[in-house]
Image (cartoon, rainbow, N blue to C red):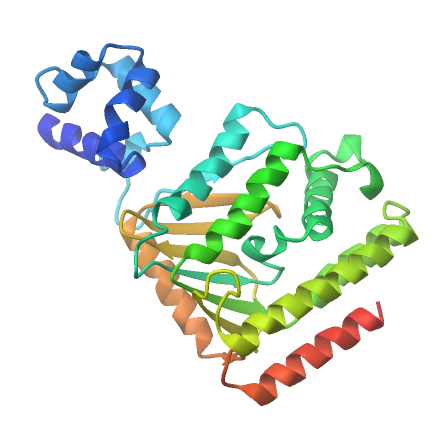
Length: 320
């Protein structure tokens, strides 16, 4: 690539990360520790970014230098793995969650925002509104991620600031104009199996098990309310829920806003890889719609399937 093409690619990536022009200059001042006029000169291409500045921008904003230099071939797509520490978070951990919340929040007034979620567990945008379910997923993540420092469920507490960010994620996600879920029909059963296992090895007390069961009923009631109406009760934004007839083996999300074509693949329970690459977005979205062919819509229409699904889930919880 020619130098001017590299520079243009870098500026494009910076503007994708900081789409608001009013914040761009002040953000670069903070990152690079230089004066505003020096930033303006770089944005006007009068003075190039130094190598050290490019490295700092890449590290702070999560910009792939391989992508900018076009090192990756058409068969390689760039993802960033977000390794967030949930139990003992640092400022960067809070920032990674806040960045995701901000993407949704900044698109609040857009009319045609869209997100699609495929999941074999309760999706994060739903379970973050239920404290015990959220706490269980953090507990399970900690059990695997910090195996040498295992804590029982009753000693696992989500830090207050993380809990607040979870709540923001739960609330802001309802501002997306159209949300489509494809859920594994074993979603509730999978969670119950996990809870029962941890109860059997004495990491979850019987009284906590009962409380989780109670909250699962509340979650199911909320989910059925959405399925019957076809929208979030809080914002009246459209929701479509599909139940997959085949097992879902990978959890992923796409989000389409004015400024972002975002793709996320969930790994390690609470960890996700994220991409803003357009071809990756198109592939994830295409895969999403291919799974719909093997799924049943239970929102508004599909009354028979909806009733059967929720009756089955309630019976599973009652037998829990």
